[in-house]
Length: 248
Length: 248
DNA sequence: TTTTCGTCAACTGCCTACAGCATACAGTCT
DNA sequence: AGACTGTATGCTGTAGGCAGTTGACGAAAA
Image (cartoon, rainbow over all chains, first blue to last red; front, side, top):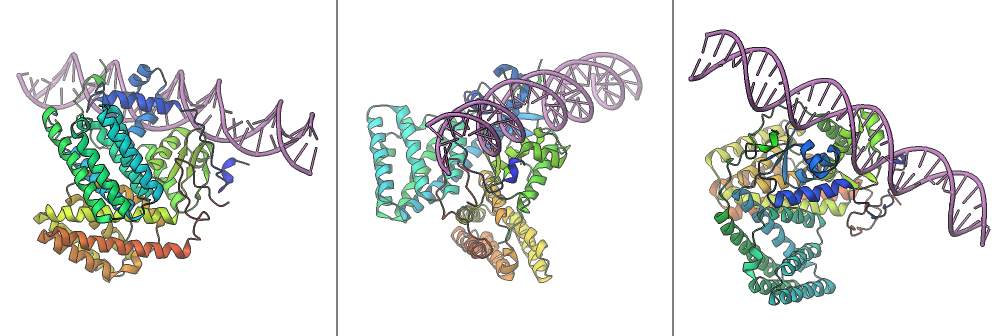
């Protein structure tokens, strides 16, 4: 009797992770991409990567698929993988979508706010402020991410949260040191946001988050405009997958 | 010299598609999942699927990764793949997010509207209406999808468009025959939406799309409430990657 | 010189095979 | 009887290898 006949059993497997090789490869390649050791548009030969990382081609292939799913590389069937070439236009769109998702999350968080949730946010906020005061930029950035992620969690919409996380990861392409520039102001906005959430004031929370994210967006863009020499490819239209047949 | 040294070359390869096996497998498995031949929570043994489809495990693995990326299956490292167990809660969240994305798209489409775009929408709308009049449900559904996809395109935000497409595909889990129920009303809303877009009236377009999608959402949910025996678990908060324990 | 065709190297997609775990079962001990 | 442990089976993760195809380079023809 094969295990798959036990439909519905699906007892939650232990999350003791042997950390499959594919994930290490994923991390390694991601690091190479972010650090620009693998450059945008570059063709990624599986054999080459396999040799470079000392593994076989199989884990490489799977890691590439994961990377493709998050938008780091483009997979062209029969032609291999290419490092995704980010454009200023795409960055703008990415940040706009992120703003949209986060704004909605803030509204929902305000609607469903709980004691513990607000307490958690407040704790993060003061930790973040402390980090800023101590000039601990790395720490502040980390806490900032955590705070935003927490707001997403508190929205109660897991789908929204997952999507936002995905988008946020992609923004890492443009890892300009924006956080350094916002400093205190950003954390004051956070405090105001938390207050609005605690009051259950949806509109206020949404408005604050909107301004907050839009401001980050403008900062990113001005930063990009400087050091990005603009993309060589003029934003080619991607092939479309079959549309989802569903009714409205 | 290896080909990958030619960074920046990245000439978009011809999209002459030999249709890799992995994609056929993807389609086949998706069909099996949607048709409930593979049931939610079921463990998918690679060897079994491989034998069933007459291919080796490799394309199966890759197809499973693709399916995982779109939320159809859950991958648990070291434990294999499980058919994702959708819940009413998730459906609600999915539809809420879709409404959010489509509403924003409608606003943007109104802002950036063009002659051709509006003409395209009008054509689709009348075709859709004709299909409804002719009781061609399948056709109407297809045209409806195309119309919504077109609005997404016209928003000019490719990231937003892709994300919405992804979400819309996931909604196919809940492929209740909603379209049959909305009928004419839906297409009248479409017409109003197009008029607002043509006028460049963002707020109006956004409002119409919001109502439009929210209505669909309510219809879906009421439908789900009926024929879905409702998930056994009373909307348990999802753990990190723990599978939805189904049918205990 | 420019164009076309043939040859060739390299790469992708796929298959087979093996090692390491995880789960299930049976036998043993308390 | 119940709990525990050893064993066996099946599955995943990975390696290695082969066939088909793509793209590039160079030679021959216009």
